[in-house]
Image 1 (cartoon, rainbow, N blue to C red):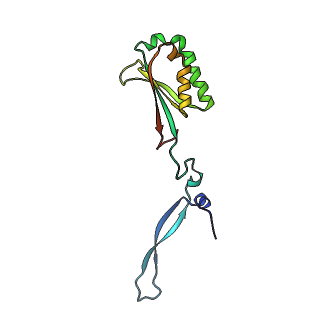
Image 2: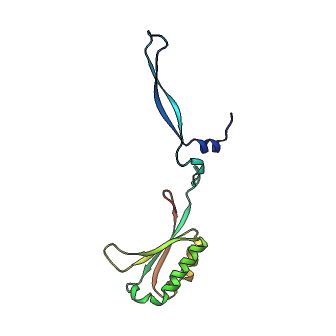
Image 3: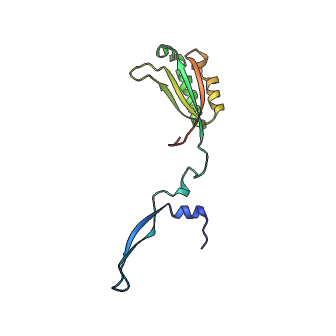
Length: 152
């Protein structure tokens, strides 16, 4: 029977080895132990996995913001537009997540980090963000990130 590799992976995802003992055919021969493959089903097949076996890791784009020291006092009039823009881009599927970043032990955010699916989306966010145009953001950078482990 010929079976494609993907069908094979759909049916089998793990091969376990078990040990069995065979009684000798004649009383003068010792018993023999050998291993035989046993097919085991698992909850998730490699073929149905969302990550292909031999693909490149997906790239994401990290947008990092630096904020003014008194961000909490000055962001108020622009916060709704800033958060609304992020929510709109999440609904469009080009922004994965985002939020403020704080130095451990401090209570005032010193910046923010956003994850985008494309560099263009990150650049669009910067261009349209009221925090940038109104001086809440003092600097930003966009870095490409290759996701190797985990989900995104």
